[in-house]
Image 1 (cartoon, rainbow, N blue to C red):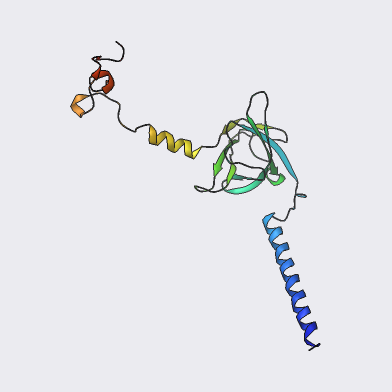
Image 2 (image 1 turned 90 degrees about the vertical axis):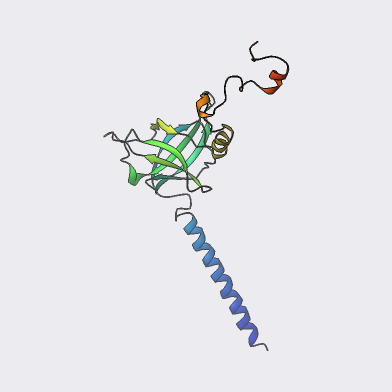
Amino acid sequence: MSSRAPRIEFAVGAFLLLALASLLVLAIASTNGKFGFGGSHYEITARFTNLGPLRENAPVKVGGVAIGRVSDIALDPVKLDSVVTLAIDDRYSDLPADTSAAILTSGLLGESYVGLQPGGDPEPLKAGDAIFLTQSSVDLIQMVGKYMFSGGADNTSDPANGAETADDAVPAYLQESGTDSPTE
């Protein structure tokens, strides 16, 4: 019976080592092997009026390829704009100075990221530069609300098309009171 105890202890120890090793692999994979240090980068800024669900450490992409991350988000107390600091990998130091930035979403409910669209300026962006051409996040709920409650109907008043006439446009409560038009 005592010869079995070391085997069980060895199996439990091996299982724990395997579990710790797999957690380490998962941690390295989720941080892209950087652990918050290493990898040289340069920082540029962009101003947005609406960030939506954008958060720090969100990816910065060009053509779907991640080239950096959002390193800081701050509020400008004077202009009340959001100032987003982008940490771009040094390998991509040739981004044109007229590059534009937009806050985009991967899929309908996916993560938000900053999408860069390079321009044609021969002068590259340098550390500390700002991107001036920006497009804020689109609020999907607000957009759906505008579509749903705008009516979507044609507002012409041509009786030949079956649209309402000027008399039909007067609300019923004004017609009952003997008033023909809301301006009287």
